[in-house]
Length: 266
Image (cartoon, rainbow, N blue to C red; front, side):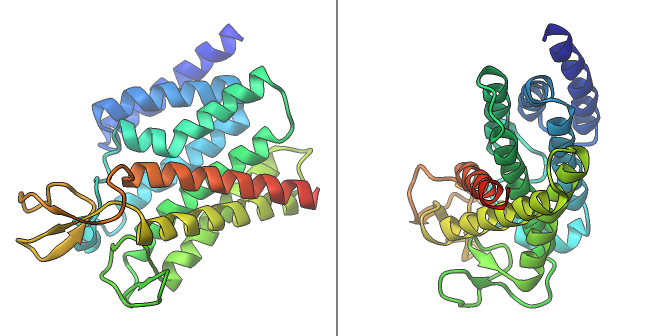
């Protein structure tokens, strides 16, 4: 086991150093990513690590795709593409816990849950990064009203397609790597888990996530201090529920949906 953890630490270190050098991680994010990566690779195994890598690499690349075109939408987001410790934990923290549990309490259902978790964070990130490039304005998931690009809870056909694609890719990759797992079942777990988790993320964003308002710019935002430098006021939502916690809750939901799909289809 010690050897596995040392190998996992070495692989994770190489990836984290490169990501930090490329500006994908802050200092706190790099330290947290090293811990998360080591736990997932070391306790889960290489298949788990590959799914984590797929999420991290694809999301990092997409965050820089047409970055200038997404500048206005990015003003609404609580954080930028340089992930800090909170973002890393929101996307990979639950997966690392599942990986440790799979080692301490062996059970066939842990990996399906992990697929759903990774499918959700991938689907949600793809939906955000590509959905903000849609030509038509998004609509609020709760009432269908048009909202500004980047608004919490806003969905679009482009974003939904990206969400399904991200979850499907995670499921397909899992099915290819694990011989005991049917490719069709794995693809279904990734797609259903990812889309369900991403949808729950949007629902929470539209209803109870803490949203602020910048009086200077007359815009809604997830930031306590807007990019313009002015402090914002609370507009709606629960004060303790920020975007990172929304992502964590959504990933848990995606994991549960993927587990249910696995039990039904297997």
